[in-house]
Image 1: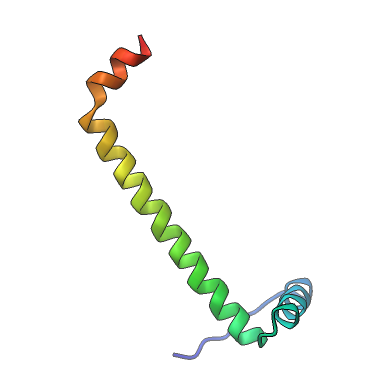
Image 2 (image 1 turned 180 degrees about the vertical axis):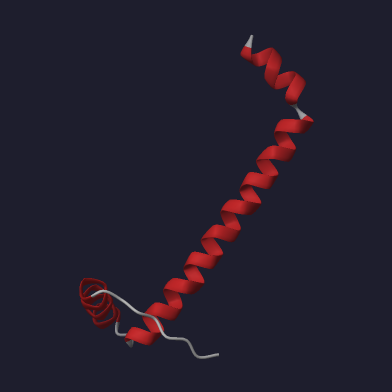
Length: 67
């Protein structure tokens, strides 16, 4: 799927510099950034869900520890 990504001049310059430093094309660097963004958000979501489950499962003990 093709898409157009509009960047400010500063964003484009930063992307170009980072891509060159990594030995990547700007397109590959942007695609990698998108993959990392999605993975990071997915991980945070899974951690939040797990923390909520643990909190619910042990709410009584947590309450007593807080007293």
